[in-house]
Amino acid sequence: RIMLSHAVECIPSSVEMWLALAKLETYENAKKVLNKARSTIPTEKSIWVTAAQLEEANGNEETVRTVIRKAVKSLTAHGVQIDREEWISEAEKCEKCGSVITCQSIIMETIGLNIEDEDRKSTWREDAENALARGSVATARAIYAHATTVLPGK
Image (cartoon, rainbow, N blue to C red; front, side, top):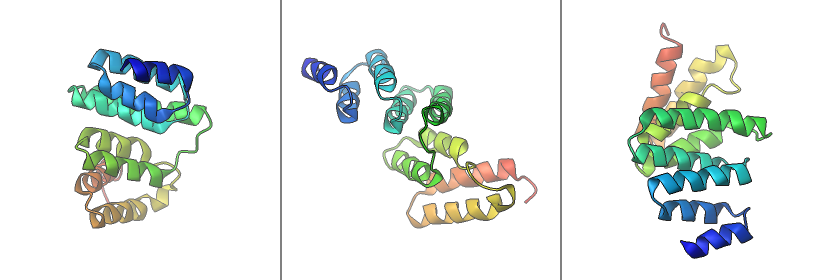
């Protein structure tokens, strides 16, 4: 832990080192490490996702949603292109490692980005079917759940 603390001071742009350090820390210290990482590298989504997973692992489901919401807002403010496909892939990775709430939150916050209103139903159905084909059942459920909330009569 001491070595990684020193390493992130020497190479503050290393996302991998920040994430490794956070994993070695207690919950409270991991939050501090991830907050420092976010301020040092504000364009890196994996730091935000790791922060959401940390909150989920500690039973803070509402905080997970808040972290992902802030991630999208902050990344956009820092000029990061928010790509739906990348976020769906990130949601599937979260599902595979057991972070289902983080997966659902990612879908809720990003699935509607850059889609015309008239294309939502068909696009979301296709996204869910593709997720199912890849074995990502929770991701597909999250897509369908979001679609039925946004398009209740369809």
